[in-house]
Length: 104
Image (cartoon, rainbow, N blue to C red; front, side):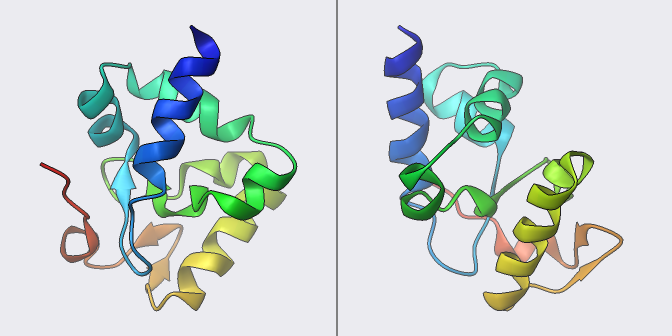
């Protein structure tokens, strides 16, 4: 079951285009998981998954980089989002609403 949930989260995250973001809760609603479960799945990613899955495009519902509490991973997330053109101040994406990616 846990591996199935991981794959579901990965499939949704792969759909987020460059320069767009989704929240843990958006993803959770789409596949019937609690937002914390989505966050745990993305936080525990390892190896090739970190390179293949655009995990950095998932933030909290207020547009904050949640992984910042994890130190280096949060810094990497901020760097990757900036590279995609997002403006960030104090770990919050500026005008984050315009960057939301919506999947029906």
